[in-house]
Image (cartoon, rainbow, N blue to C red; front, side):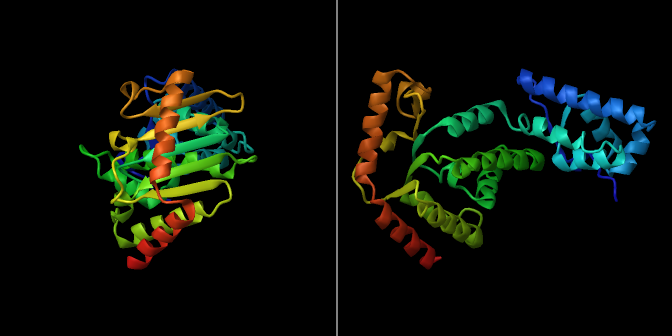
Length: 284
């Protein structure tokens, strides 16, 4: 097995502002170092055995780098840990994504109803991996390849909301223009449209398309998100209201709900929306 150079290190930097994440990764790194030392292996010897660079081993053991699952599996084999090192993947998985993304994913995992109006792109919960990657790679200044993969993984982990039982009620309103934009090329675009059709046919999902020729509606000010929880509480956010901050006050939520309801009324019904997407797919 070849040893990877530092520029190809398969790990992620630890966010210094994420106190919990820093503590978890420091603990994982310390456990890995203690097990390696107990096995009588030097860093150089261990690095060769697991197939990664010494610099990466030092960074992981010092809590400066988040190990990927495959690193922990390989370390478990080399150290004959009997699955105890591999078991750390569960703890690492909780902090491998940025704190903001974890908070959003946690809210989505608890919500019984999620409503989203997306104006400039396809919503993250509906994006394919290649579509998400193409969007992230288009950022300026560009992200490093390592950061791109981490951000793609963070976006995809939120897709577990579709696998929840009991399933939440999901509603999306997407503008026509982003659906026509061949992000990532024709193949990636086709796969993304197919993904939308697949999601829109799920029993708990309602997908609507806002045609370009529709009159002005509240969504011209930007994205709107509404999440409702089992205890009757809710949280929402709109680009054009309340300085874009999340709100939970009932009066403010009623304004968001009014805007979102108006947007839904302007959009094509779900069945016509799927037919519209099928037509777009046929044009690719």
